[in-house]
Length: 289
Image (cartoon, rainbow, N blue to C red; front, side, top):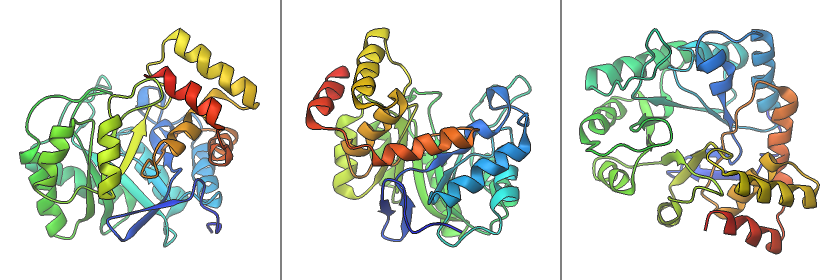
């Protein structure tokens, strides 16, 4: 059962989908390279159950993690799901035999992916589906109208509750919004990589969640050194400080740190209680300026 305390507080999407601001990213539950099964399936199940016990109500996954592995473990660990637990998934890619992530964004492919997510998670409807547009960390130019329209049609059929979009430009977000309401945007963003500052502020004004991934990705050695110094002064860890900065950056930011360790999971949740003083916030914010 979930506790009454949600780490980092909560954020409500589209007026009816309330998520804990610190969620759990399930990518690391699969094997190396997010391919194949984990070395210790029981440990993966334990991490998911501890996440729920800690008050996390937002689990981020994708059927192409494994593939299928993480969704099957989520179902094993948590089904039947608590009423306040929401599983957010992604479509738009598949896995090849070498572990690559080729795009799969044709309407028929997207329908199949939605159906597979429903099957492997044991659900009749997906709370939120993100369309993955770009590759790892990088948006790709081009229209999102065809794939996003396909997802909007699946939403109209009742298979999807809300839609989001991932690894995209501000222009692609706007194009998607012209087709159907966008509840979340999931992009690469952290203290050192601030290309989405304006987009985050715009989404906050519209009540749309922004979910950054790779909170410690793409740092230079100098930037990492400055982050380490702040963490040392606060008696914390760089990961906790980086996540605390994101939580304080904007109220519409939701985090999905991933881990296969219960101890590391508890450290991630502890970031919700770390209040960064103004002087250290200034130091951190200058890293990506």
